[in-house]
Structures are given as C-alpha cells and as structure tokens.
Amino acid sequence: MRERRLVLVVTSVALFLSVLVWFNYSAVLPLVVAEWGLSGTEAGIVFGAFQAGYLLAILPAGWLADRYSPRWVIAVGATGTAVPSLAFAGVADGFLLGTLLRFLSGLFVAGVYVPGMRFVSDWFPGPVRGKALGLYIGTFSLGAGLSFVFSTMAAEAVDWRLAIAVTSVGALFVAPPMLLLTRDNPERTRSTGGGLDYSILRNREYLSAVCVYSFHNWELFGVRNWLLAFLVAAPAFASVESAVLPGLVVGGMIVASGFGNVAGGWLSDRVGRPRTIAAALGASTLVSAVFGLLGRLPLAALVAITVGYGFVLAMDSAPTSTLVTEVVADEHVGTALSVQSLAGFSTTVVSPVVFGLALDRAGYAAAFPTLAAGGFVGLLSVGVLVRARGE
Image (cartoon, rainbow, N blue to C red; front, side, top):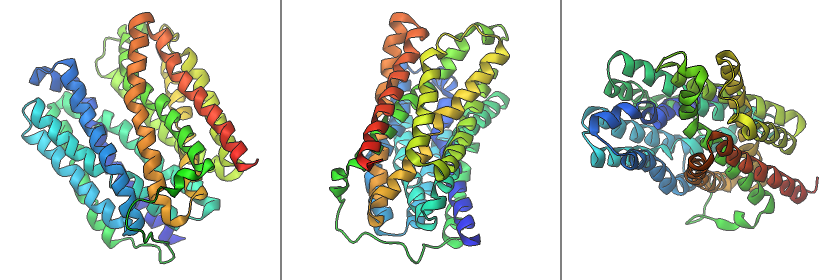
C-alpha cells in the first residue's frame, strides 16, 4: 500500500509540473500578441502547435508505455517538455520560433499524461483504480488552473517571459524522483508486439467509452477556450474593472475540475462507472445549455456557478479512463488510452470553432448550447456503452 501511494504521488507531481507548461502560453497570450505583433490567426497557430505535437506523439507514447517502462517514458517526456518551453521564455522572438518551440513541448508532453495513466493502472487494482486515476487526472486540472494563476501573477509582477520560465522549470526535476523513487510493478503485463495493436477497435465497450470521452472533451475544452472571453464581456466583471480577476476565476474553475475528477473516480468505485459518467454528463449538459444566459448575474453568483460548472464538467473524465483500462487486455492499456486521448483531443480542435461560429451569429446564448450538444451526444454514447456491457 505504501509503495502504491508513493507511485501515485510521484506520478501525479510529474503530471502537475508538465501541465503547467501546457497552459502557460494561454495565460499570457495577450502580452505575447502585443510584443510580437501577432495576428489572431498567428496567435492561434502558436497555441495549436502544442496540441498538434501532442496528437502526433500520443500513439507512439502509449505503445512505448506498453512495451517498455512507463517511468522512463515519463522522465524523458517531462524533460523534453521543459527544455523547449524554457527556450520559448528565453530566446523566442516571433511567430516562427515560437511555433516550433511550442510544437516540441507538445510532442514531449505526450510522454507524460497517458504513460502516467498506464503506470498508475499497473499499481492499482479495479476496486480502487477509479479513485487513484481520479487523483492522477485531477492533477491535470489542478496544473492547468494554477498555470493560469501563477502565470497571471508573474506576468503582472514582472513580464510574460518570467511567467513562462517559472511554470516550465519544474518539469526539469521530474526525472530523478520518477526513476529513483518508483519501480515498475513486477506483475505488470508487457506488450510483445512489434507495432501498435488495433484489435481494440473491435471492442464495442471500448469504442463506446472513446466516444463518451471525445464528447466530454468537446464540452470541456470548448468551455476552457472561451470562458475567459465570456467573463471579460460579462457586465458583472466589467463593473469590477480588473484585468486579473477573470483570469483568476478561470484558474479557480479549472482547479475545481481537479476536485471533480477525484469525486468522479471515487464515486465510480462505489456506484459503477456508467452511472457516474451519466450523472456527470447530465449535470454539465444542463449547465452548458443555459450558461450563456447568466452573464448578467451578480458577480458572486456568477463566480459560484462558474466554479461549480468546472466541478461537474470533469466528473466523468476519470471514470471513463478507468473503464477503458478495464475493458481491454492489460498489455494494451497504454495503446487503448492513447487512441482514446487522440480521439478525445481531436474534438478540441473543432468545438471551439463551432462555438465561435455560433457566437458570431447569435452571441453567447447560442454558443454555449453547441457545447451542450456535445454533452448530449456523450450521454447517448453512455447508453450504447451500457447496452454493450449488457447492463
């Protein structure tokens, strides 16, 4: 039990320090745009380069975690995430170099997130795996939220380069504890195949879970991409005249998602994965459907609802990933999680665009329901999943 807890703590810290890099650019985006004179399209490409690197590397990262030690994959991935990001802070001077460095960081961060899930799954059996993965995946949200907070404060105090640097340097220190304080589970099952095994694509339960996760991400990342703009435009925040407060609220909302992950994982160990996923998606879909109408609420009420929104948005994430680890063979867990992540993060490219199209035509009241539509499709996928499981 003590060794399992150490594995969870070390792996979660590795993810936390790496995720700070993932979102630090978004937190200082207006300052980078102003200094480099970027167009909206160029600024979006710099952001998208990180996502593109992640998507390109995620399948190989999962295969490596199945075939070799996930500890080494995580150690290399975290170090490779930090170095280009520190270079971004130190020497990047415009669109081309900034895009390249963010792409490299995204390429290496793929070696942290999914291999970490595989590593935690190796050590925690089914009855407690949901809670363990909830804590681990919750670290993603915690790191994302605090990246906004740390970056906003550092940029306000000094400049955006310091903000990028202080949220990047921690990932350099992941490898030593990962390699020295943990070990592979002696009972883990390794893949012996020579390439990616796509037999999982014939598994109906797995495919249903991937669909659930994809539309969970449609909703979650659509919110995260547009929430700051919505809050800045809301009369309640405009009356405060603070450039920092909306960013801190976004950070707090994403941190609340971390607690939602933990709660969802814990609950799914007790009442079942599909039931927990359905309850969480149902709640988030309802909030997404009406959230665009809430901009005129008093500040305290809007902040409270926003934080609660973050909590329910993430409650289905850990149960879904846990279910994936349970419906495929142990030796293919890394690959299965990688395919899930590839499908899930692919929708994050589309949903913010659909949201923007609706926003241009009819405002936030019409834009947020496009995210609710994704949540509803996720709910339908849960129904398919339950049917495939014969429950």
